[in-house]
Length: 95
Image 1 (cartoon, helix red, strand yellow):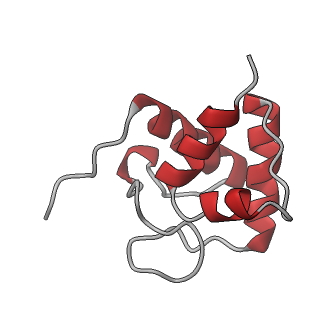
Image 2 (cartoon, rainbow, N blue to C red; image 1 turned 90 degrees about the vertical axis):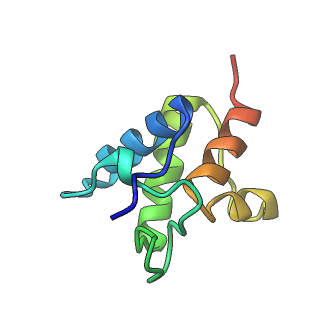
């Protein structure tokens, strides 16, 4: 069995917030693959759906002050993985 992927402190915080916001029982934030797909049925992904995306957007707005708009292609692309989402949000965080 391979070691858990290394997450940065910011990625780990984002993972913890995702797990809490989505009530992902049995998911340990530190074991989320940073480049794994957040949506769909990929083997190293979380298997989230569009309802989860709304919850994530709300959590990000509350915790980071960043509004994710569905008509923004960069925001949509940011949902590809934990790493891309974290990088997108941190680059746009207010304060």
